[in-house]
Length: 66
Image (spheres, rainbow, N blue to C red):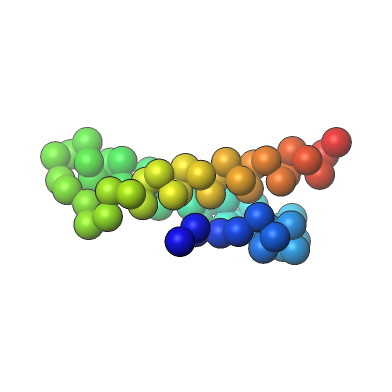
């Protein structure tokens, strides 16, 4: 299940997208910190999903600039 879909991103306002991007980056940072500290996370596949969601948001933002 994707974290966020492309059609949902395109319907969002630019402010909402930026807010969501910051939220996802913060979550990814927390997960990486936990792993680097020697801990284990509940769902390791979540990191991959977070990175993909961040890339999707950045892609939509760059498409709108053009």
